Image 1: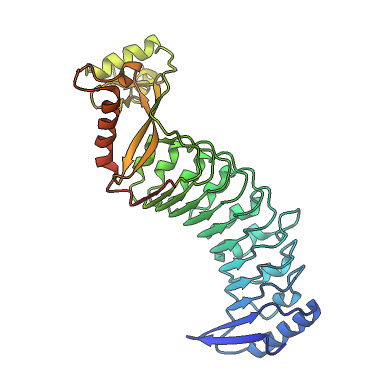
Image 2: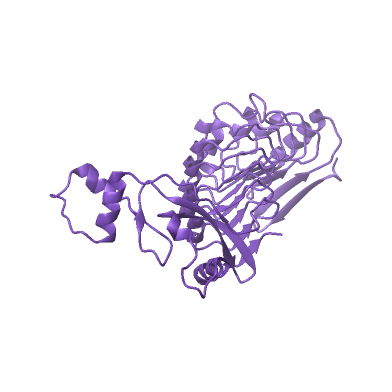
Length: 371
């Protein structure tokens, strides 16, 4: 036992590493109690406890006594079906690694987790490789979380309450069965890394363009056929992974179009002809409606739309190497027609537009992974 255990002290910190011991839980309990007693009253308290690959079925009871200064606990690669109340005694815990266990059933997390001191202290939580079918509600109350990993579980969805984790910088949900991305995900102002690969996602909500801190977006091995045009607004995005998606391989136009209402036609006329009006000229509901105008992205049009538009899937060049399908919303079918000039074909028109947009986006995107 002594050969397998190591206490490492460095820079005023201490680490206890007990891995692959192949001993009964009682023996491990005794060892932990002895180590805790050794450190009791020491100038340098034990800050990191690593217990991976010990076939643990439950957390050692000794955690509840003598480890109050612990900042990191690693219980990965065991046979845990629940993280017991002993966890709540670790009042200053910052990092909890519990990947590759059997967590996910009722009672997997300790009762009172959302009300415990961990709500304010826990910053890194890794529960990947377990059996969770949904994100536990108590996790969504851990407001200090900066990194949350739930990859390789059985998650069916992302709850809208994910927006509660306002400090989140890294969210790893790869390798699940997620079909949709909730728009509430866009309400995480500090999110830098978002991993949603190896799921069943069919579309990306345009609201994700509000993730202005996002640097890496992993969407490979999903069911995507296009991306929203708004993704160009991710000004800090450096890496976008799209391989393994059924992305369309040719220029496609969807001309399904319902004619605009008389209200929209009138509003379009006011906007395109710059008809002047004051707040006293129109009812409040019409003033609000006029404020919702969206500009047609066709640079040769100059029109606007409100509720009625034409969807168009269009390839945009990134970095002069990749052609990325983005969704455009045009004001009318005519905006998707080729230029009437004889010197331009339909193909050259689409390529020209792509080149125009490439000049806007190329300097923003350093790496686009399609293959």
